[in-house]
Image 1: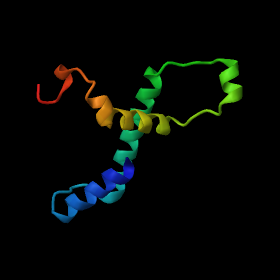
Image 2 (image 1 turned 45 degrees about the horizontal axis):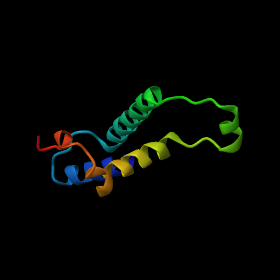
Image 3 (image 1 turned 60 degrees about the vertical axis):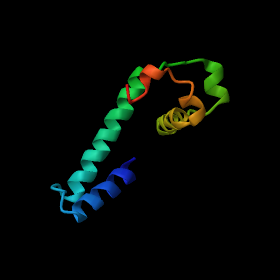
Image 4 (image 1 turned 180 degrees about the vertical axis):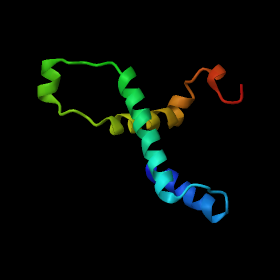
Length: 89
């Protein structure tokens, strides 16, 4: 995520549209990503089964977020979405 935002910012500054210096911009992007991950951590269900903790190593939150976004972008899942959630409505 941070790399995408940094690349976008570099293209904006090349076109004359950027107003932040790169260090401040990277700090803002990193802070925003951390805030989003913190919010996701707060709303995800917590399962503290002893068997799960022993058998499976904990997965990173970043990996979980990436898997959810990938699942949301799959055409197979998009075609099952209720039409009222489509962006053109």
